[in-house]
Image 1 (cartoon, rainbow, N blue to C red):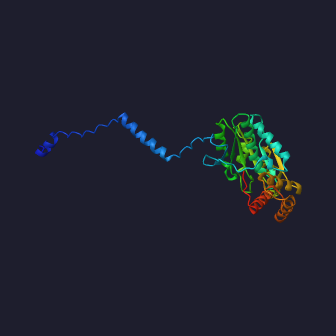
Image 2: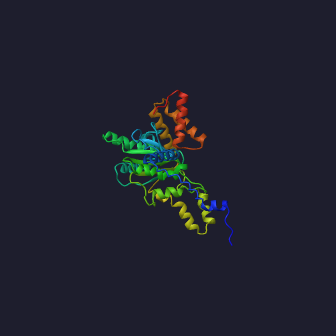
Image 3: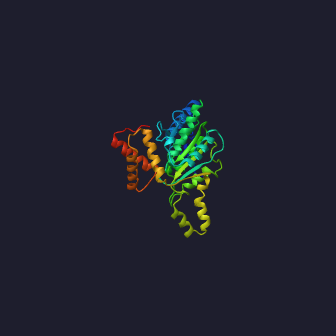
Length: 318
């Protein structure tokens, strides 16, 4: 016979289960709150992101210096000499001026490599050609079409960024690199090859590249010889190295000047700056100066003129 349940057991059996606690209702975000959050996130990301460089004002100068951070620094006064003072380089002078003039008119023109003896006016000719063409257009009551942009050799890898800026401009650009050359471990020349000729986009129609170098192929001779002696296929290795200079359609060679050409440079400077000195004394001192320097060039002639003018108390003006 079953035993009757105790009072406590009966009370547990009849007790109702406790009601479950209700979960708090999910808050519905307001559209205005979402917009504020997104705006704060966007502002924070904007502060973290690098600032976009402002578009350069290309109307304030005719010459600029390129910086790899995307900045074009205007040059209000270019360090240049007049075309008439460049003596002993008549042939290459005429060729570069003609090429530059065609480019300024929108006609086909070549990239130019000015190579050869040091101090013979390679970079001076580039700057003088730029000034002469702009002056010609100014005399014809036309706006100066050419902008000279100097890029340093160590910044060559940033050349594509400069090309992007130039491509979107209505001006025409001479991109100029002075004393361009490459060493054994330097591979930045490959970037220059792609920009000059061979890249997908190619060189912009409104850009031409002028470079000066003491080396005809922009590479040292031992660098090329090393490829011949150690390469698996020496011929291909050398071709890869020297193919950069092939991207320049115009090669202009500068060679050491003769004594007569050196004296013509000196006399040209003396006449231009109105330095009063007898012809015999000028010739004797100029030859003595070149002998002590062991060289005859336009740079040596200008250094002599600076020494002569300083000794005579003459101020050299542009």
